[in-house]
Length: 263
Image 1 (tube, helix red, strand yellow):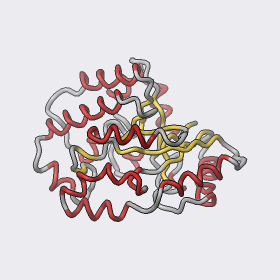
Image 2 (image 1 turned 90 degrees about the horizontal axis):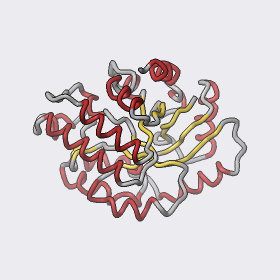
Image 3 (image 1 turned 180 degrees about the vertical axis):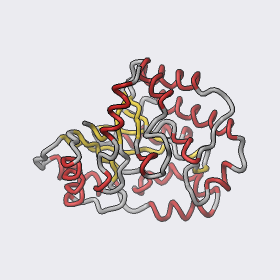
Image 4 (image 1 turned 180 degrees about the horizontal axis):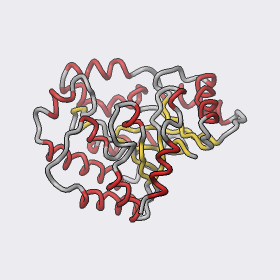
């Protein structure tokens, strides 16, 4: 089993901390673990968040808490772990907050290190974070039309896939987090995304974090989207989005069963 999205965000970048995730993965029956962290942890990626910081104080405060250290610290950890004999396959990468206007910046910085994988994710809509329980409602959802938010989100996702920067797309229907739903049928959008993912050889996540971290009724990516992805021949990767060792492998077995039963 694969857990394709696990964060070091809440701990130090040390071998000892990584081994806690590896041991938890073993206990959960995971034989391939993808370890990463968000780009907002690392100073070099600060330009990605310029618009967030300009927009409002809540987002400035959020970013100030997230930014911690230079990327070199992570690279040193990866080098150390690559020299360590491990009981399961472990890969190292980044979750990159994709911002269309910063694509040239991303192309330049991401090619400077041989990551095992790169996950593209969308956490903001043109400078406004959509997934913050404490303030996203007031800065985005209460202001813009829900249909417009969905349309822009998937437009950004299409750009992200076409950039050819990423091997994987994180939680592709995460907009459903707070149960805001568009008035239009998303199936044509899902089909466009699926065709692009297949064409560009990009894996799409079914990320269980939305279920156990945010108590959403869906186990991961919604069944309609998953079915369309599978029918298009897109590789679907299971991911827990664990932010602590105890959550590694959460609901991965259940998600694998769902994927096996898709028509």
